[in-house]
Every structure is written in C-alpha cells, then in structure tokens.
Length: 104
Image 1 (spheres, rainbow, N blue to C red):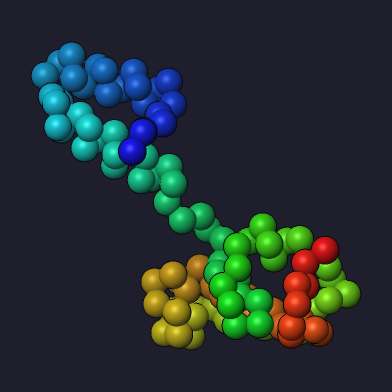
Image 2 (tube, helix red, strand yellow; image 1 turned 120 degrees about the vertical axis):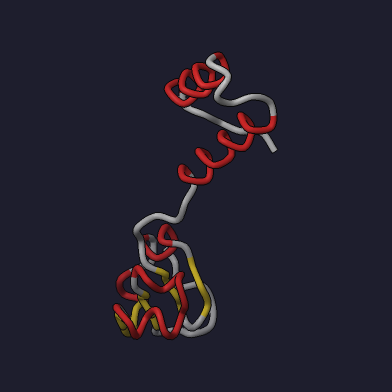
C-alpha cells in the first residue's frame, strides 16, 4: 500500500524522525495513522436507495423526478438501526421505479 501524504505531513514526519522521536516502523505507523485520519469517513450521512446502500455522489446525481419519497433517520434511531455508521444520520430514498437505474 502506497501512502500519500501532504508536504506538511512529510515535513512533520521527517522532523520527528530526525529528532529520534520516530524511527523505522514507528514513522510508518505514524504515517498510516495520519492517512487514516485523511480518509476517515466524512460528515455525510449514509444513503440508501430502495434498500441498497449508495454513495453520496450517487444520491446527488439522482433525477428528482425518479424519487418517490425520502425519509430521514437521525439521532439515536439512526445509531440503533445502523450502528456507528448511522451516527451521522441516514437518508432512505425510494424511487418511483424500484427496478432499474434511478440515476440520470
């Protein structure tokens, strides 16, 4: 797996290594932790279309005319139903045509 770090992160890691605070495996571990924070889940809710999970991008590209209903589940209800992944809320979308592609 190749790590992609910003120039600032590289400078911080190099500085830490140069000052003997991080060496070898510790530097790689720090880089992976930094990367994990960069690719951590966003603040966007979970999206479902006709019961199947979709990405926020797919949800944004749905044709408004193809949507029959939208239900928002938030708070404790979302966390109870969907676990930690639902803690940011859940958007349940039902399309008018439940078979086929509802995207534009």
